[in-house]
Amino acid sequence: MKRRSEAIHFAVPGALDQATGGYRYDAAIVAGLRALGHEVVVHELAGRFPLADAPAVAAARAALKKIGRGRAVIDGLALPAFAGLLGGKRRIAGLVHHPLWLESGMARRTADELRRLESGMLKQLATVIVTSQATRLDVMALGVDPGSIAVVEPGTAPGAVRWRGAGVARLLSVGTLTPRKAHDLLLRALAKQRHRGWRLICAGSVTRNVHHARALRALVTRLRLGARVRFTGEVPPRTLARLYAGSDLFILPSLHEGYGMAFAEALARGVPVVGSHAGALSDVVPRPAGILVPPGRVTALSSTLRLLLGTSHRRERLARGAFLRRRYFPGWPAQVRRFLRALPS
Image (cartoon, rainbow, N blue to C red; front, side, top):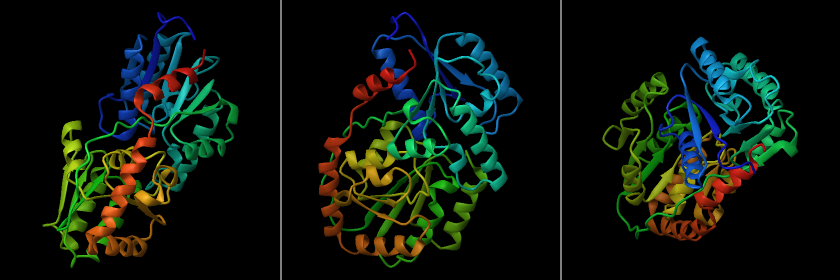
């Protein structure tokens, strides 16, 4: 490891304090490295991502000039802006939360272009850091040398656990309103259970994909669920903690997850989860703590909800499993040290 006086550069698209899982991971790593005594220079890149526009490329070029021959981490969402710029800089690591080309809702041509771009760029880097074993396999499928890939899962801090009883089920979904998170499937599945007692809170950005967010609100109206569903937008950490504490069940039927920090955070608070067999979720959510269904299957999701919304004892059994699972999640201090060891020397 280099002497501590050497700065570690961290390039992210836009502001670091955004409330998505990927940005929260980045921010936790930056804070942890600084707590260990390392100087961390954060480059908050202007422009559009991942389909980089001229301002994004200019910001990437300026960041590389400041990085020089130093050690750096480039968040995977920002990587396309660095295409053709990395050259012989061999002390740069890429941080892949999930491959960009696997994002849902984009045109096939766009996905193919991102796949080609990611495959080429990740091979140029000294190290590729991923957040799960499942994402490691996705990166290997792009032709990246397995020996250059390091897995550093997110840290998870255990939260307060409360007793969850019977009555109207309080459901929570945490995730940006994008097609990949499949909130539309959740709403359609819940519409089939309108005779059950439930309320749903969806916490997550409504501005990253305004068109999709509007479509979801329209779907709520068409399904006549307006009195039962609330979209909060992004919420601060304390508010999110209160939402977890007040929930009986966490539900997010994502079509793909590079890790699934929200799922881990729910389990760490003893909240049972329902999700999909998508990406890393099969590793994050064990059977005693939650139920995973095939991705994109409204009928399977609705059948699962029928079981869990019908009586509280099923949810209570899963909540006990969630409580037991939480002790196995690594904490952030250990993961920050693991991340540091993975950086190019």
